[in-house]
Amino acid sequence: MGRLTLKAIPGAKHPDIEFIAPSGRSGMANAPVLKVRLTEPPVDGRANKAIEKWLGKLSGTPVRICAGASSRIKTIAFDMDEEVFLAAIRKALGGL
Image (cartoon, rainbow, N blue to C red):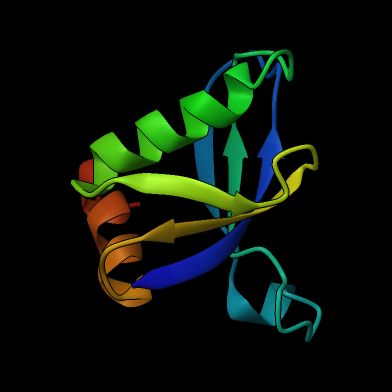
């Protein structure tokens, strides 16, 4: 089972996923590797549900938030290797 950290930006004008390069991760072990912009507001868990649904659809595997439910920095878990997960998202977004 894979895990990675992301930064959520709820209430954005347009949904988007940005891949953060390892050099831009400030040397922190738990630094985000994805920046996920969502149009949903951070109200009643709507943004969290949108993250799980969108990343699950893009990757083809269930995604759940396992830490940071009330924070912009979140840890997600999924049933595949991290590199395979990120590659599936890149492919689904058109090879970004």
